[in-house]
Length: 411
Ligand code: NDP
Image (cartoon, rainbow, N blue to C red; front, top):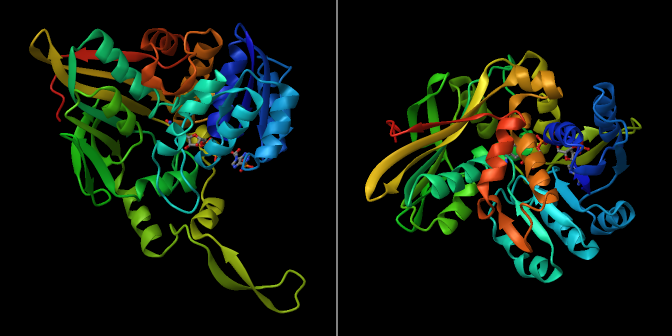
């Protein structure tokens, strides 16, 4: 058993906290700490009202500030820190873990605030320091990255001698009945999907214009959905850890209305991440002043909060891996996937399916760590651990998975 500290109090952190609280056999003490303490208190209260657990501690912390993190870690002394705040905080939290002897887990790789660009190099640079300290960092333990990487590891372990073609397919066939909303933090989400597309083929990365490549794919229990090739972070580590891969791509579905809104947002400059200045009346009424804002951060403030989408969300997500490769010299195909109902997620945790499919794997990763099944010094992507106990837990903790063998992958 061990002590866990969850940083962040958004949709993903809420789901992870509920699930961690339900796994009382491995988590002896739980603390939730975030920028806004009242949000941590609300999560602890929800968990108490559900009759799950009433001893969750909360705290205020600015995770951009290493000294604040260090003070908090020294006071609570967690065995594992789960970073469920934003990717901007990955490095400060990893640094504080090293200074205080804590292990680390996250769901998204680092990106700097002033550049919409994500890659693992910044976090992989910490490998030697974690190794020397005898500490473990588990990177990318949500659904994608996370479960999709573990699905790939499971396929490599049980179904293929050689994985050659990997397509990760992410479909959200749910409807939140809002004109436009993102399913997780709007700032991070819009930065991700307005980037150029990128995929891996024959040892090289190939760049595409945003949303340039798309195809209709059929998803189990959902049907056909237009799916767009995006740059996604798990490809970067998977092609290194499975060097037989000849081509790796990531696809995500978007509805036409969503894409139209996104186009408008980009064309009118609201997705900009640089600071702009505008003239606004002074608060004391004594004239005008220059005010600085980052348009995308302002947009986040007026868009629906992903945490509040759950109540009216219907439909389901369907995320999986479509893999082609060799076994005993013969070509085989394999499709492993999970479908998650937004309503079922909401009924269990108060959050919608996208927060659920991220928070549950984060909890399972923490469980794997506490049980000693996933714990080795260094900085590791999830596919570097044994997938079997994790896959077993997915079925027990609300994310059932299914397999199809030798089917048409459409890709
Ligand atoms: P939210 O915006 O709902 O929540 C983010 C939380 O982090 C908020 O509570 C926010 O505080 C807190 N936070 C932000 N900055 C700081 C800071 N400096 N110090 C302390 N706390 C801070 O995001 P989500 O819950 O939707 O997403 C959380 C993470 O999950 C993101 O990193 C996202 O990229 C990742 N994700 C991963 C997925 C995967 O499958 N791997 C899928 C979906 C999301 P405040 O409330 O005060 O703003």
